[in-house]
Each structure stands twice: as C-alpha cells, then as structure tokens.
Length: 421
DNA sequence: GGCTGCGCACATT
DNA sequence: AATGTGCGCAGCC
Image 1 (tube, rainbow, N blue to C red):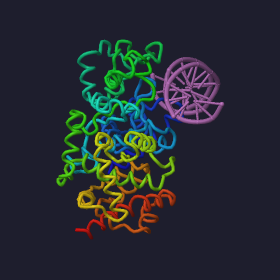
Image 2 (image 1 turned 45 degrees about the horizontal axis):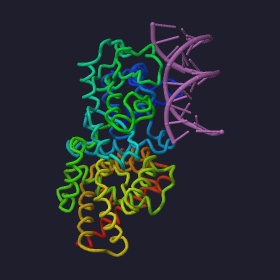
Image 3 (image 1 turned 60 degrees about the vertical axis):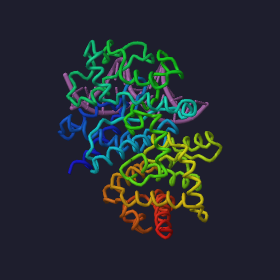
C-alpha cells in the first residue's frame, strides 16, 4: 500500500525542500514526511532507501553533505556525474536478484558514485573497489564506533533513527569546502564516511585532503552496488570475463544479467544516438568513455548494473560484436549463445528488473509506470506498441523512445534468438 | 519553535 | 558563462 504512496511523499518532499532551497537531507525529508503524512521516520528511511535503490531517488554527496535528489529531475540536468542511476540500478538489481522480490530489499541505499569516468581508464578497479568500502552501513558503523566524538550533528535529535541512513546524513563533512563546521555539524565528525570513501576512492587522483577530492558533487556512496564486484574487483573482472561465455545461470548473477542487457541497450543507444536529454547523464558519458577506452569497440552500456558492466568492458566488447552480428545477420555461435543468455534473462526479469532497466536507460519516471503495471520480463515481451503508448499512462515522447529503442529491440533480440534455437 | 521564502555565495558543468 | 545547490537569515504562523 505504501510503496507508491511513500514514493510520492518522498519525492514530493524532496521537491518541496528543493524549491524552498533547503537541502533535501534525510533529516528534513523524514521530518517533513512525518509532519505531512504522519509517517514514522524509520519507515520513511526504509522507503527512501528503496527509492534510492530503484533509482527513483538519488543520493548524492554535495558540498560535503548528503543530499537526495528526485532522479526524474536531476536526470535532465547534470550530465555525467549521475552514474548514480546506473550504479544504483545495478545494485538494486543485484539485491533484487537475491531476494527476488520487488522492492523488498532493504539494504543500504547507496548512491551514486561519482566515479569520474575518466578515472576509469586509469584505475577502474581501484576506484570501484575502493569505494566499495563501507556503504552506508559500514560507514555508519565506523563512524559510530570510531569517530563520533561529538554526536552533535543536526541529526541527533532528529527523529530519524534509521541507522544506515543516519550515517549518511551524519556526514556533514568539513571536508574543506566549508570553512568550518556549520552550525549543525558537529565539528568533531571530521572524517565522515563520505570523505573517507572518497579519499579511498581515488588514492592517486586527488589528495584526500583536497577538498575537491572529498566534496563536490560526488555521488559518493554506492559502493554497494554489485557487492561482489566491489569486493573483488579484480577477481570479478576476471571472473566475469572468464565466466561470461558460460553464462547460463546468469540469471542468478545480477551483474551478468545486466551485462547482457546492457550490451543490448548500449548498442541501441548508440545506434539511435539517443538524445542526451533522455539519457541518464552518465549514459552519454559512459558511452563516450567506453568508446575511447577501447577503440570504439567496447561499449559499456548504461545498464542497470553499471558497475558490473564497467568492469566487464572486455566482455562487452565481445558482446557488442556478437550483437552486431546478430543484428546484422549473425556471426557465429558465440553470438547466438549470447543472445540466448540475454533472452533467458529477459524471461526472468522481475518487475523490479524491468523498472530498473528503464530507469537506467534514462526513463526513471516511466520506469515507475512499468512497476505500477507490474511489467516483468515476460510481460515486456508481450507488450505491443499501443500498450506502451497508451497503457502505461506515460507521455508519448518517452513512450515512443522506450518502445522503439528498448522494448522493440529487446523483443526482437529475444525472438531472433528463439528462431536460432 | 517550526516552517517557509529567498538572497547570495559557492559548486559544477 | 550558465546553472544548480543550499546556507543563513528574516518573516510568518
């Protein structure tokens, strides 16, 4: 009952705070939701996390503190940095895969990683895994345990008790941007998780002490995405590459799943050169980046599990090739194999996967409609143009793009595969 | 005391 | 240079 309701409330709250020029942080969000709707902060926290995971809300580290953004709005603006979405998607799907239930997972909401895509080239794995640290929960613990000299954060009294979240909000970092700990910030909180994370993230890029390294628009958190990967970036990568050909049980591996899809989408995106405004910011960036990385062949597509994808650029390249082959006439068993995987995956996509996919593809608002209509992979395969244009109550423009560039392609790929098989 | 509006400086692209 | 963000303060209830 409450999920959609909460979504609305929270998004509303975020918008409202933003329009009021107040930072949409956890505390304020919880407070406002409680005031307006009487919802318990705890619950709000939980719901917020879910929204973060489904990318409806983006969690960002801006100017040294955590803020939450309405993904639907953010999306249009900033270009790259918002990998968040992708990341989130990845993570979300990962979680989802595990739990198999829609929004049920409650793990920490991590947000976006700012990961400069540029870094990717140089130290992808490093960046990725570094930030893997802690997640909120981890961070949380650390801060509670280690440095929390003065619990004097704004939060303290805050109604919010959501531990994980609190951690997040807590980090009001004097990371440098702000000359001094603001009124609300407890001076002592020195190293907030965010800062730490960031610092760790780019060991070589920027000195930890550098404000730039710690603050700014960093989509900091998220390391949680693709936990596996994060934990063993190197391994993951290798594994992924190695495993990939064999991917069958892929379904269980979010990363794998996403990869397949991703690749698909990526192609699409590229082909149709989606308008940047529709793309999730990083999409464009990523595409470019990816391209550069490996002479035009690789294409990390902004799919739900971006992180995973990222690391698997290599795979991707082969994938791409495969796909190309497939779309253009077929290339070999490898191709069909891949296709197969993808299709199978598609059949097993949950409602959440579908929503996640579209969110990552740059249609967060519309993704909600898919979720609302409970469109899972199978339903997706059955969707017709009219269903998309009129059955979801979404705007025509995005609907057309979604149908033509994504659904149609997914369906075609799926059925082609079947033919082959 | 809490909420809201908003100028303005800062951050980011 | 343009635009987004949010601190800090004043006004309102």
